[in-house]
Length: 423
Image (cartoon, rainbow, N blue to C red; front, side):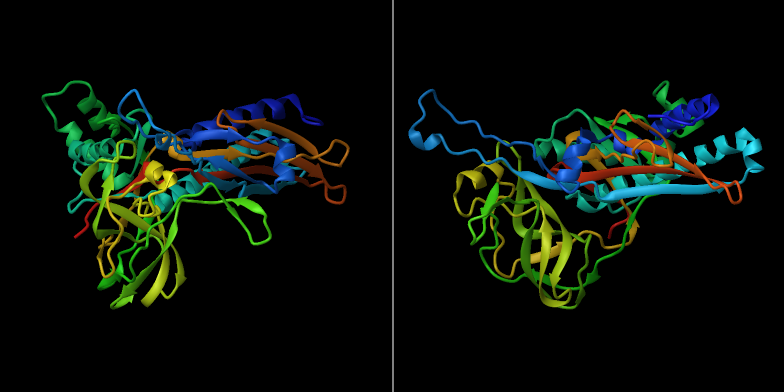
C-alpha cells in the first residue's frame, strides 16, 4: 500500500527494494517459507517447521508385520525473532534535494541487508555440526573437495550446496586457481576479479565479514556416565496430559573436565563414536563431530552441556532411532573427547540449501493512522516497510525502514563449518 508518496519516492522505493534483494547473499542460499500475517499474530510469531524425513529401504518382496514400523516426523521451532529498523529525520530544507533522500534510503537498505546477512551467517556458523578442521591455510580445490567428500559420505544431496568463505580464505583459493596455467577461463577470472565460482559441487561465496571461533580453553575432557544416547520423538506428553512438539536437534551430555572450561561453539569428537550415512546407516569410518550449543551446568569440572546433533545410536532399538540413527555406538563412560577448534580462526560455513530456512514476517499499519507507508517483499519472502510522518512544529520529516524475519537451522547434520590453521 502506498499513500501520500510522490512518484519519485515510489520509484526510489522500488529501486531500493531491488537493491535490497541483491544484497541478501546468504539468505538467498537458504530455503524460504512465508507465514500469513494472521498466523504470525495467532502463533506469537512462532511456528514449527518439519525436518527432512530419513527413511530406510529393506530387502525382499515379502515383508512381515515387524517391518512396517511407525514413521516419526520431526520438527523444529522457528520464530520471527529478528526485527531491524533504520530510522532517520530530514528537515524541510534537506528535503529540497531529493537526491539526498534517495542516497540515505540506499544506505538504509544496505544496513538492513547487512543485518540479515549477519543473522544468517551467525546461525550457520553456530548451528552447523559438520566440522572440518584443516591444519594448514586455505589452498584451493583440495579444501573444498574435503567438504564434498564429507557430505557425500553422510548422504547429503549433491545439488544446492553452498560454501561461504572469509575473504582471506577465499582469496587464498583464488590465488591457487589463478596459478593454474593448464586451465582456461576460470584462472583468468580468478586473477582479475578473485572469483572462485563453483568448486567440487559447491557454489562458493566471499564474505566481507566472517564470525570467528575462539580456541578451546580446556585440557582433558571425557564422557561422564554410560548410556547417554537419545531417542527421537515427535511429541511429548506432560503430566497434565497436554501434548507438545519436541525439538530433537540436541541433547544434554554429562562430561568431566580435567582443567579449564568448555564453551558454546566448541567442536569435538568422541572416541569410538563414528558417523554413519544418513540413509544406509553404513559406518563412514570417520568420527562424528558435535558442537556445544549451551552450558546447562558447570563449564569446568563435572558438568552438563547441550550438544548438537543428538547422539542417536539406536541404543533403545526403537523405530525412531533406526530411522534417524547417526552414529555407530553409544559413547562409553570415560570416553575421551577431542576438541577440534584448537586455535582461534575464521568460521567458514557451508550447507545444503534445505538445512536452513528464512522466514519473512510483516507489519501492518492501518490507513488513516497518521503515517504514510509503502511496503514490498523480496523473492525470498523478506518484507521491507517504509514509513514516514511529518511534524508541524519544525517541519521535520521522520522516515524509517523496517524488516521482520526469522532464520532456523532445520537440519544441523546437513550444515557445517570449515576451520583452517588448526593444530
